[in-house]
Image (tube, rainbow, N blue to C red; front, side, top):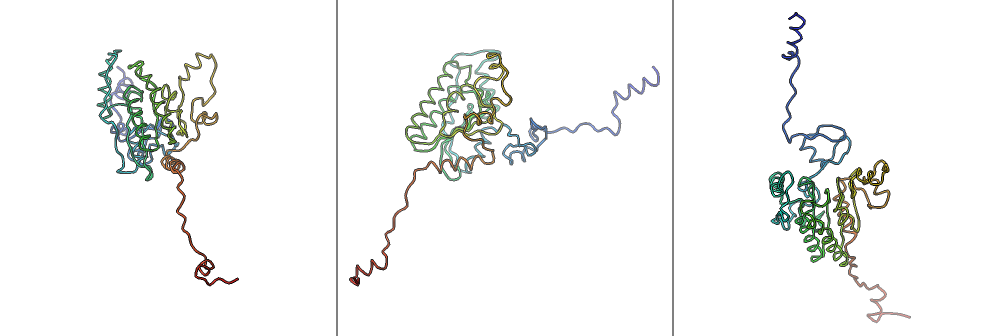
Length: 309
């Protein structure tokens, strides 16, 4: 071995004194923006509503974050929190569906992919259904459909507005037709809600696709979306392969859908609570103020017999 080879091997095996090892980052303390790559302290990111302070990218927010962002503190009352999914088809792929459910329940602390409840938005009561993409991609199974349907029916019974924060990959294939029928069931509940003259506002976040888009996500009186959210039914590649055409840039983004009339407004996350509160106030029935009858001085004089011709 030559002297040169000895130095070369030493350089490979022994780090130089001035080279410091990479600093380990504790899991969960930092988050990296998927767009600009900037690292953000998790606590600061939550304080900024899970929006990147550098590029304004709206990161995924779980259902607990959404509820914290939208609902007044101390007013959230969960609904149907103890409804758990089963495995009616005994579905098995690489892993049994029942085991997958248990894994996601342990990971997220949720029974399924939606939280429903009653809370106040800027002092105004409303019924909310908040989907959670962490739980099997926010897919809609029988429990998700049942909880959303019950929430809408409660809103109808109590004469309250209903709000759905959508984040889903679509219907849950592990439940087959039981999953697909939730589209019609929720749509029926929304029709009864609309017939009662009540407000329903879906908020489309990234991503909102599949059976959710084909049902309650697009049935709102006013449909809101977050910036740059992916919204559609089938995936882009599936559509291109079927049509054998290249789709335009920005296809299936909230900006594209706003331009073509599928959504009514794109709302920044920092303005979402204020916008929802304003919509609820505008939709409240008008109650005219009481009329206070006041007598003019001349009328008083005439009533006392002091009038003159």
